[in-house]
Image 1: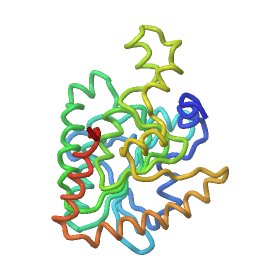
Image 2: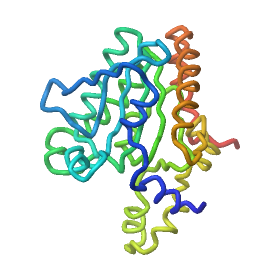
Image 3: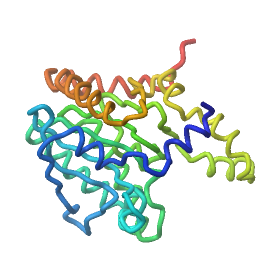
Image 4: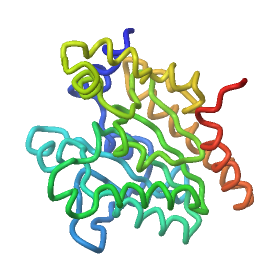
Amino acid sequence: MEAYERVLTARAKGRPSGLSFITNIFEDFVEFHGDRRFADDKAIVAGIARLCGMPVTVIAHEKGSDTQDKVERNFGSAHPEGYRKALRQMKLAEKFRRPVVCFIDTSGAFPGIGAEERGQAQAIAENLMEMMTLKTPILAVLIGEGGSGGALALAVADEVWMLQNTIYSVISPEGCASILWKDASRVKEAAESLRLTAEDLLEFGVIERIIKEPEDFSEIYVRLREQIYETVSKHRALPVETLLDNRYKRFRKLGVREA
């Protein structure tokens, strides 16, 4: 499958959303709301749940189901209060030593005037900083689009996984083509150049695992439940100092090429 076909598949109507993964993988999910500063951003869903009996904190981008729901959730493009809500739940997870599981599916953080006035860049930067030293395991799974800082704000993790037909990139192919060549028709060329597929990112060491996608997504839910439990249990067993050191080394090695 060509890179731009992967882009279209990641955006496809009817693709399971963040809430679908939460409800089909975890038990006893209780959603929390608000950032204690401004409002509750419905583009980010966050709360506590159980995974095979283990208490966890779950955070996800949510694009919505029908048209009204998509509009209310801003098509998964979060405002700063969404990222502050996510960070509030992460800090609670750290306090109670609950692993954090993030499901990422966004074209990017919302770039509107209101979001910028309320500190969009600062909210994202604060998440990056705090997640790097969060004293509890973090796992991030890309389930659709992984767009720019909006995705990265939930992806500073001990491991990052991607479903087979998802993408992860600093910019959309459309935005890249418009900026580089002033020609949106070169979107397929931009998609290839961005190297945004799961296979590309596994090769570069940006992610740790690719989850294959069968036709029936219920198989993915079962597989992910087992794999997530196994992985967070492994990281949870590590001393905090080792966990943080491994996370630091993971990101420091990105982009390093052998001489």
